[in-house]
Amino acid sequence: MGINLFVPKFRTQEILKEIEVCLEKGWTGLGFKTVEFEEKWKEYSGLPCAHFLSSNTAGLHLALNILREERGWKEADEVITTPLTFVSTNHAILYERLTPVFADVDDYLCLDPRSVESRITPRTRAVMFVGMGGNAGQLEAVIGLCRERGLALILDAAHMAGTRLVGEHVGRHVDAAVFSFQAVKNLPTGDSGMICFADPARDRLARKKSWLGISKDTYERFATPDATYRWRYDVESVGFKYHGNSLMAAVALAQLKYLEEDNTRRRELSSLYDSLLPQVPAVTPVRTAPRCVSSRHLYQVCVPRRDDVVEFLHRRGISPGVHYVDNTTYPMYRSGDGTCPVARRKSDTLLSLPLHLNLSDGDARTVVEVLAEAVRALPA
View 1 (cartoon, helix red, strand yellow):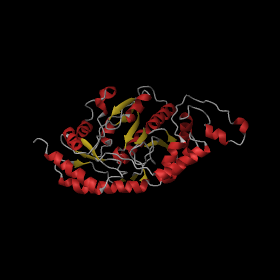
View 2 (cartoon, one colour):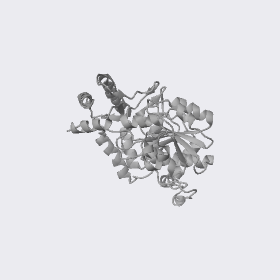
View 3 (cartoon, rainbow, N blue to C red):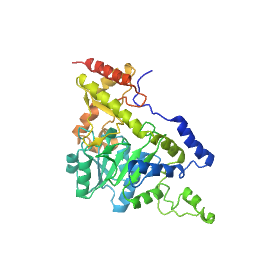
View 4 (tube, rainbow, N blue to C red):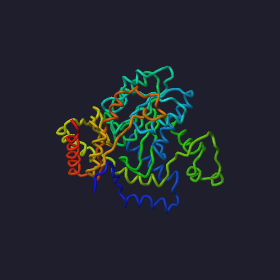
């Protein structure tokens, strides 16, 4: 049996009990459990608004769509973003026919505020900040820059369920924070996400837009005391089918109770890696930013001849990951090719080590031992 990069842990019996309630009630779609999970997420995170969605990607698009319409952004207006991310971050910008402008990253693999500032033009409207691996990087500086320049700030918090910055759950000082509860994330479901606007008016609009622009969802209409009007609704705008469902929310409710415990274990494993890796030459761990308590979704290192190291590890039954390939190498983002040298250099050397709740301390030691062998086996 090998050592895998991700192995999600599900509390099966508790999840089945939550799902059973949905099935017995005959309500598996929007409403009921989605409402309950939204309230629990607000209680957990301290964020003022939370709307449960089908995915993080849906949330990123929804955030840009609402901000674009509200502020009157024009086609081809610019959003500063990172090339070092999963492509959904940048695809969401293209969905709204906006132009992604790539800024470089820092040693935390997050946007470098100096690079962000250098990319601002009269057409810049927003910044998309990605909390890579759960790391907050220099988010505080980017928040200050966006406030100073009047730019919207969207936090792609796909990796950040449980990340805290200066004692607060991330997401309090941005226009929108979008979390992921996809199958291998820290709070795993099948696939789902959460958008957390700072402005309640935007949250209300998101609820309509995520249900095709319909004024009242089925759950709201069902709950009305006057049955005569249960079938009535208006379609106020063109929207999307981005809402979450009660089955995924049921899974999330069972998992949320363990998020802090699970993240603590991830941090313990990460600390073990931190203690072992100085013994391995030419391997540099990615540091966590000061004032940040990371969710530790990923444990990333930079290694020489990364592809050769990956092949060596696979032969020894260890499955690492690469997060991520520089997006400017893809055809739709080729205009940014060569503009972010740090991101390109990091992308060519990054390696994500196995990090999950089924990983034992012994497994982590084995990963480091084999990684050391892989590096020693590289040509001089």
